[in-house]
Image 1 (cartoon, rainbow, N blue to C red):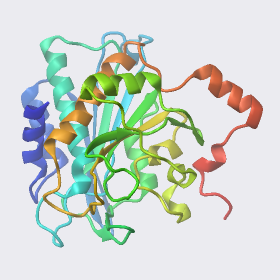
Image 2 (tube, rainbow, N blue to C red; image 1 turned 45 degrees about the horizontal axis):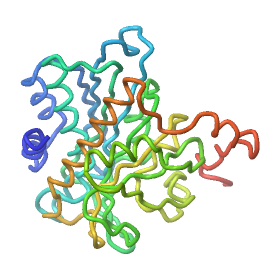
Image 3 (cartoon, rainbow, N blue to C red; image 1 turned 120 degrees about the horizontal axis):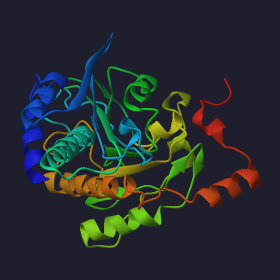
Length: 310
């Protein structure tokens, strides 16, 4: 994926980065189903980009093969005018859009998946910065509810949420890590299928980053969150797994010169391999029977998808 990563990076690492420029890039690859929607607020604007890669027997063609969603999570690609250049927080969008380009190219060449893939993220080269411990985070022109509304699609049967996750002291690994599966307020066990995919992609033992209950609740409850990587889980019944691009030391989301293309490429290949297996019914994010037993024993936990008592 390095070719696609470098090409997409050149599109995003500029002050006039936009959804339109990325769509033009996809148009040069071939026919695509890319939709760009700009959203403006008092804090600025951002371009939401959503692309569907159509499979042989997916929902679009009336088939029964599942649809995987990939969401690139971030506040912004750049912190202009506070900083010049591509910020660490942009890794989620970079990974998602490079995966889009790679899958589209493969599809056009004849390597067509069984099910559909829907990939969404947003492009903002001049997002604001917010204070956070241990290092500052990127803010966004739009709130989390709007992000979820624009990026989650009801056709997604499962979701990978990819995000730079370096501003913490609990992930001490240079590369990428995945989370436990999160579904309807439950933090479930890490998927064995996804761990196997991670092993074959990296040639190393898999890395799973820690989650706490606050991390899977909506941002607006004002509790501490690791970052926004699991926020899609607050707005869908589909199982969600975070794919975190990581570092050994805490790095601010608004820091420039941080993006490691090799780490982003590894995370991207992991997502592509997951796409192949999931859309061909060879991969599961969770065990359905065990989840149903949890519900029988303890009831639903959907209250954790809300902001709690007001």
